[in-house]
Length: 296
Ligand SMILES: Cc1cc2nc3c(=O)[nH]c(=O)nc-3n(C[C@H](O)[C@H](O)[C@H](O)COP(=O)(O)OP(=O)(O)OC[C@H]3O[C@@H](n4cnc5c(N)ncnc54)[C@H](O)[C@@H]3O)c2cc1C
Image 1 (spheres, helix red, strand yellow):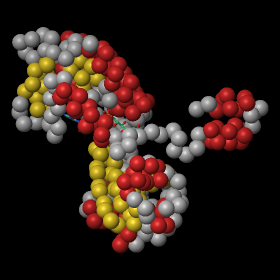
Image 2: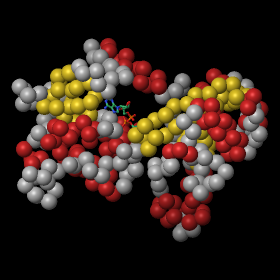
Image 3: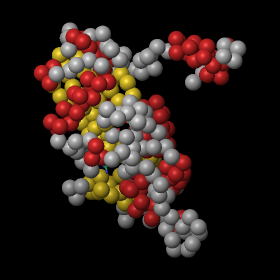
Image 4: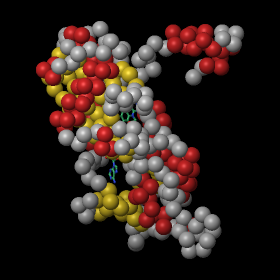
């Protein structure tokens, strides 16, 4: 961002323009976090919902959303345990929104004509939605004074062509977030390796936790350029994110537009989430606020 203006100021010199932009935005200055971790925001949100008389059910998968037969403006939400909730307004914010909407869209009169207007061929606006990839995060807590100097700053992204590293990215957490460095104490570091690009061969990432931690430690040593023996590891955590980071291909964008317009025809239904708005909180949050506004 800002390159055309910087180019004008640098009288057309690309090198000078880039240098001035980089000087104005040192590494890490474009990111923000929450002291203590972003999960605190979730806890605060749950507390707020409950204070307003709402209920949050975690570990509760929705398997189906369907019209309430006896109420033309109502919906039924079917849970994995078979329970059925009724609602007059729905916000669908899961990466599986396309699947959940399908029965509702099939029930609308407009759905009876297909994309080629072939009578009786149901259009499926969810065709082309990218599922996203499985992303595995391995966090290592390391005792290593060699890391005090933050040899790679706050982290690195790994080129797909790299042959000596399986990870796609490394974040040096204690170099990135002052609150985390304070919590870890002197000489202790939190380093996070990230695995799984869209389209990757999933078998390259071990399913076994011990093998994954060994791989992460080797990758961390290569990427950080310091020896990291096994006894430097004081703690580990592995988290797998499914359906993460959908790719914004042209087919995906076209399907999102179709799903959004089909959902807009359903009274009391709003859709949002990274699958529609694009990855990252800067896209997801305003989209969610807009979705909520359409229902209020
Ligand atoms: C490893 C990683 C690092 C990232 N780092 C950053 C970052 O630094 N900055 C940034 O801005 N963005 C980052 N992102 C992207 C950001 O996390 C996402 O864009 C954002 O969380 C998407 O929000 P969402 O609400 O659409 O989806 P999610 O946060 O994925 O939430 C969707 C929820 O729906 C639930 N769900 C799915 N199916 C069902 C169902 N059938 N019934 C009920 N619930 C269901 C899921 O369990 C999940 O809780 C990162 C993503 C990943 C994977």
